[in-house]
Image (cartoon, rainbow, N blue to C red; front, side, top):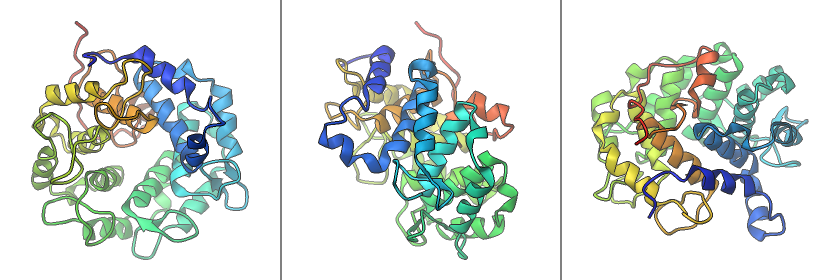
Length: 326
């Protein structure tokens, strides 16, 4: 089991993604392709290796996912536009300082067309709603500088209705609290400058109780630990300024134990198959708890802190102090 972050191996792993286009798994994950590019790029940024992937090739792929009919992005060329992949496209273009390639008015119109009378967002024209999509809509409008076009009270009202007795949030009104849904709701409230809506103390305790004896975090009570919750839980705690409510040393050990020491990448838990999703959220979690040598990540937007600061969008979150390398 590795006791340090294997940066070079993780960079090589991310660089290798997409090499095996004949594999069934490559085609079975086409619906996540643009999201995966964002996950890989952001992981590289956190590890201070942004240039490990070709900038122009990445931008060209993003633009190849443009859905001209909808005025937004699908997850793969010739896929229908979706709010999640559109947010990933915006994040990639901003990180690469290439937002000028985007038809911003059309994208804003697409986003707003998915805002429902209840205040939640649909993911696409087919109408599935979820607090995840609410976050995607709010974050995308904020990053594009058009948050003023959103009915904030309507949106906050929906989030308020999703709050449960334990302080957490579900994917819709009446749904069970879940750490990933807590992140999207708290993140959206932070962007909208309405964090007073969250029950900081009760929610802080609920999030802290997600840590298990092995140091890992789960998404809800009585579930197994999973590396991705290292970001979902920590991001919300960071926004609430309660990161010191969990044992960061034990969490760090758990994340590092889920690395593949031979081929690179991080899995959901030790000895499982790695993927780029868990690789990003593992290194992002380590960044928030001050792991040495990593770059700062903004927990509200899950993008490099320097990028968000340059845009003037940083909120009042607090990460743990970066430790010096031994």
